[in-house]
Length: 628
Image (cartoon, rainbow, N blue to C red):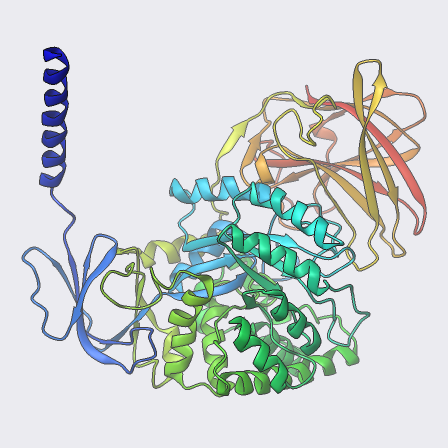
């Protein structure tokens, strides 16, 4: 007993010593931002104040604060301090000009450079969540606060046009419950639901979610403590989605004026409204002028490789006169509906659809705030929407979005007075994320580098896939994916793991070509999880695989430094009997002669392509895919 008592006292003494030692450690110097006009994100008018930051949080805000000894003092005279901006609708992995894939690292930096400190990402398979979060946590990818959303579309609905396998397509409420439970295993930060299939009158409408299916998605999400944001663009579906319990409508009502009924439902349900005005303003401008402006601020926020394509990059660049007319009409409808909903007291947040062609990362958020003023908000109200209101819509208002003691110090200093002259919102001078100042010079230099953002490259095992795992994964632990030609009526693929022998399995693919040329599907075997990081396969000579089929096929190797659709590829033939195909990397070719040379150090995935005449069926069976 004495020994036990002595041990207890020893532990207590040691604990007290450790705690005292920790408390005695020198804290980081406080930061005092002095002399700024403070627009605090609550909707209150600007005031002159000193803002004191300790660690990652705001410690005090006041006009005559005592500045502690040793504090770093920032003289902010002539500047306005606002909370970091929010963008509730982005596609971070996507490039924003025609023919150029995105550079995730540069895209993230563009938001920081623009003073956008919180973004919601609607792109990518949930397989991308873990590697992206890890790269951000490790500092490989400097990033604003990042919320990653899982995607839900109705079968044949918007979001399924590319035949991609990374989203979920429930047809019923029961299926939505089941798919949500599967998606929640990836720990998404939000859910994106494509509730509306209207194509703005310029094409055939796609399918919609009914109220019961949307309600099932919302029920599961809310039980997990996360928000549901939607693609909803018509008045009728806005009412259905709001009644179903979604949190934020992440597009505006584009077809007709908002009526009293939708306002009543929004109020009853607490629905927020994010109209992605920059997306539609860009399309309206492009439809009217046939070009897009390359402004000085955009030049600062976009990589050099994209600059030449900016003036001619738009989703309607090859559109019909009818679709151009539609773009002009919906802009007018969106502006009027912002005016109506704001006057009725509906919370208006900010989001852009950045990553759509022509909607540029970071820059679009700055434009969005200005468009809210075009739509009738005052500059002060627009800043409130982009900060405090958006934070509340995401459910993070208790932690950030306003400049108040105890809040996280995500702050932006801009030149001028954006609460009076909203164009000044573009004049970003200093950015703080969690109390740490971002090195904007270094961020700008990285954006303007002609080199892509460096990503980790991992050597991978030789065996990629042998069919023996029953969980839909490769031998590398990556999830098998697929894609197709784009369109509502894209080609389809049905993969099935089947018995090849008594104890041997293979992967059988059945495809139906869509009605357009080219018609193709691609089975994807990612070499790293989510194809985010890179695979160094330079130690191998080529790829071999066992195959059966009927006709010609292609093997493609997607690499990081090839930024168009012209990937390294080689054709092969398959017949009814099994054979082993060996393709040396030297056989992989691109159509373009101005191509990055093959190095094997930046591979992302192997793709097996089945291209066939419109409307025809085809098959392919694969086994023992490996490097040699």
